[in-house]
Structures are given as structure tokens and as C-alpha cells.
Amino acid sequence: MQRTIDILSAGELFVDFTTADFAQTIEEGTLFKRTPSGAPSELAIQMARLGKKAMVASTVGSDDMGKTIISYLKKLGIDTSCIAQVEEPTTLILNTRSANESNIQVYRAADSMLSIRQFPFQSFEQIGVFHSTCFALSKNPSQHVILQAAERAQRAGCIVSLDINFTHKIFPDRIEAKKAVSEFARYKALIKISAQDWKNLYEDDAPAPQAVIEHFLKIGASEVCYINQDAFWAGNGQETHSLPFRSATLPDHHAFLSAYLTARLDEKNLLESATAGRKMSELPVSATEKVTKEQIYSEIEG
Image (cartoon, rainbow, N blue to C red):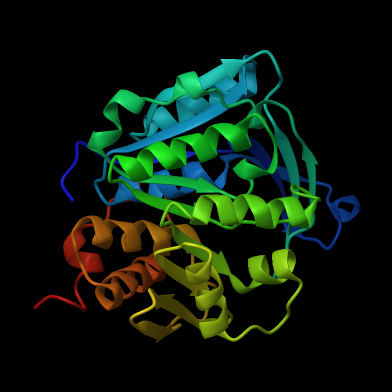
């Protein structure tokens, strides 16, 4: 799929204050590191590392934190023309470093104020992937705007993609969260979900990977990427593939999805896309170091 904009990634932008040391609770944290963050921008950054044209649609405050986030993304080559600054302050999150699931405290404000005017609907035919997150669907007006954008993106022939980064503190109503996910999935979405996200949303500790994949296919998804403690899984109803982890460190999910989507844009098949995703997830995580297609396709070409 050759289009002038490879990905428009829409949703939450915030400043993440993470404990410098491992901690189980916010109370234990005494020193915090500040990082501009948000899953949509993290995916866009990884796509940009692969040489892709990446845009972010989001809202931040008209404050110093908002300006800092926009400046940070511009320096990394991200198109920020769809990021708006609003009167509400930039969203802040306190976050613990944890070997398992982080403990977070959220101070929400600007992130949920997306407007339909921010989206370049006249250019959707030139966008390869429209991506968003469960976090972004957790509150209106952003939820309504993103679902409308997903519908238009699907009509324009975009790959429509959703990261189910569900946490109860962000989206306290599970019934509403499941409904929003189902509405997004029906636009033939590509769904990415981790075992922890599944546990958080569906309260199921040990799902069978094939059952997870079939659940989303039944509600309208076109393909599913599921990441559990052992492997990456990819399925589309006709075939399912499992690729075991080969690294002792936890894989970077955004890196995986960036290469997976890049491969889909390059019309690679399901197994090839998952293989490219795994390869990307094994590379050192960096916001600036470029990655070539030869690197991520080294196991499927030649």
C-alpha cells in the first residue's frame, strides 16, 4: 500500500513521571524521571525509526508541558500538525517502574479533548494506517471523535488498528470499554492486545491464545496480534502463527507493532509480518536510531 502518509496515530499524549528505581507503589517513589509519552506517539516514533511518515493527532495543554511534548515529537521527525493545544492542562501520569504491571496515578485533562476538526479527512485516501488505543476511547469527546475517524479511515481504504492498552484506572467502566472496543473492531480493525491487557479488560488470567484471536475476529476484527508471556501470536481466521520470544528481556510492544504494520503496508503476509515484528522488538529500543527494512526483513528475504 503506497500512500504519502504511512500512519496517523490518534489518542493520548501526556507527560509520564516514572520512578527512577523499582517500586510497588507511588508512595515508595522518591525520584521520578519525566518523559513525554502516550502509546500513539510511541508507535509513531517507532514507525519513524523505520523511515515511515508518521503523524500524531492528539491534544495537549497550552502550557509548558504541552509545548515540550510537541517539540520532542518534532525533533524525532513526527508530523505534529494534527496536535492541538487547549485550555485544559496537559495530562500527567505518575508511574512506578515494575517488573510486572506498573502502578499509576493519573491526572487527566487535555488528552481527552480531541476534536473532529483536527483530522485531515480530505487526505485519508493518502494515509496507510489509522491507529488508536483503548486509553483514547476511555472518555468523550475523544471516544466519539476517534470512532468517527476510524469509520472514515476504513471507508478510505486505510488499515485500521487498535492497541487495547486497557487499565481500570483509565477506563473504570469495563462494560463501556468492551462496547467501545467492539465498535472500533467492526471497522475490520487489526487488534493488538497483550496478556495483561486481556486480564485487565476481560478478567481472565490464562486465556488460550486462539480463543483471544477468535473473540476479536467474531466482533469484526480482520486480524489479531496477541502477546503473552512466551510468544507473539498472529491470526486472521484462515491461519494462526506463534513466534516464541528469543530474548531474555521483555519485548517492546510498540516496536513489534511498528514493524508488523510496516510489513503489512509492504504487502507482506501474516507470518512475514509477525516475523518482522519480532525482529524489530529484539533490537535496542531507541527514539532516534534508524532501522532499515533489510534489518527487519532479514529472516524473510534472502
